[in-house]
Image (cartoon, rainbow, N blue to C red; front, side):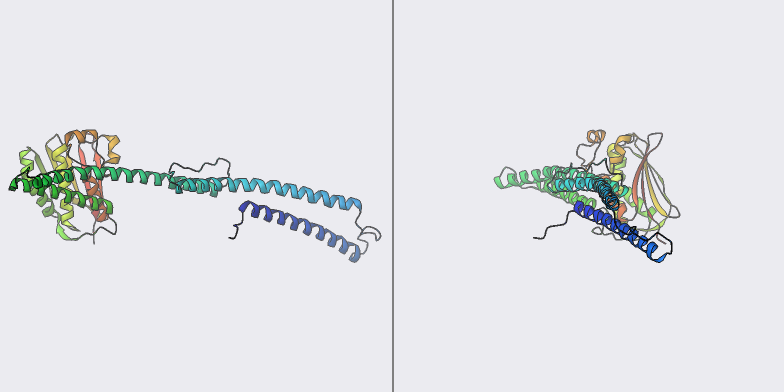
Length: 355
């Protein structure tokens, strides 16, 4: 097995070689200069013993050579330390990360080389992102297992009861089993949408639609729920032809309307649509109570729910808004939230205008 060259030895070899070359050039150049001066310049130097090396000359050469070597060695070691210390820190941390220690970071305060410092900072940033992704993966796995466990347990219990004769096979039981199965189907579809995040694995069926009709269709589907919960729906809709996947836009509106039913205490919902030079948009505004500022940065992340949301709707799983953002990203758009000074929640769906 061929032994890999060591960088510190290479630096030392090159620096010492450079020093020797400079010394040789200096000595040979001096000798040639004086030879030319003595032999070819009339009266340049008196002929005699001047061209012979004296003890003083040899002493000067030895002193200059030794001094040059010591200076070269000093600066070689300093340069090697500046380069190799952070590189060794990065290499050691990489080894720890490869062994599963995602807390590993490279620390070096001695290097004054900008490129080396950038390397260490970029490595630490990469390690930080890896650790964050691993924490998110574990959180996702735990959340998915938790959300799947309940319907699967119910299905298993009911089916086992049918096999053991505890339950009589009737329409009500089968309807309950079907409801649990549909809930599983919706959860799996939501997970698929969120995991794609608008990427290549997520496909749309865009077509030209009248956005007013699409929004009205979604509102009609919730008409009974809004009425039974005494909601006041204010619409400021206008005819707007745009290109989108209408079923997916309705899916986004379904999530937002359902959230309003569960979490809005104002019982008032304002729905608007419009277009700018660059994008189409839909605004969904309720009159409060609004989402606390500290939680807003987690609002569109999967399985993230505030304390108030858990109390208001214990059965929710925190996937709805992450699905909305994934759908809008697939449209090359975005989903955003802002809280007004009156504590009104305003959700905005936007996507580019296709010309």
